[in-house]
Image (cartoon, rainbow, N blue to C red; front, side, top):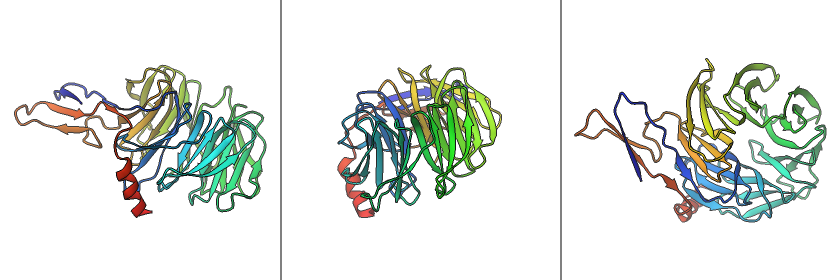
Length: 350
């Protein structure tokens, strides 16, 4: 375990929790919603073994085994009972997130990069290198998926928006496109000078967060009208807006995590903890922490409010040193706790 002592006049030092276990770069991550058992975190990795963790501590719960290639995308449904993954083995898979069992394998014609559940978990959206969006009815998996064509290059990210009535997709063709689900028609297109590196959708406020080059941009997700842009010090691969829209965080090629004030666009903090470029970053559903995944093969959990007691971060004021703050907690988290206990708890819930 670590312990660090600070006086009130010193700046608080961010101490991230490191989640090890992957053996290759971590390229995507996603949180569930808040459930009666907390919230959960899934990571996609080029080692082909997506992992499920307790979201507030990073404790390893299980690994989904079955893909035969790099996993490029991963997601959980709201209540963390289902997971979906997108992989280089030309498949997307749906998993029972409680038992860890594979439920469905959905064959594609090329590498799959992105997966997204509808709010009711009944449909799965996929996209990838064959340039097509596909919508699978999970209650009738034998049926052919609906297909939407329009992109001219590989699709990197696809998301449901507007109460699942519309779809947002970002591709290597330097566009983001908004689609109508019922008509399957393109509603609007945004074109950029370079390929979009990431895309996040926030239903509360209908905000779209995208990154390209050194730019972090915020759009209205319904109209695709620009709200604001912020320039970062380095090329950015991913950004995430705090649930209360106070802050946003971003990570990229210089190994750092940046935190900005959303209203003023001022850079508030920057932290270097990873030993490789940061590929993905997301706020937890309660906004208390954000998770990052890196080329170095680790995930790291960072406190939004440094020094607060939350999860495994413990802050105490020792009685004999009233002017000092003691921050303690474990430095490394790996796959060794919580597996059987989690499944017993969640089985009763499900």
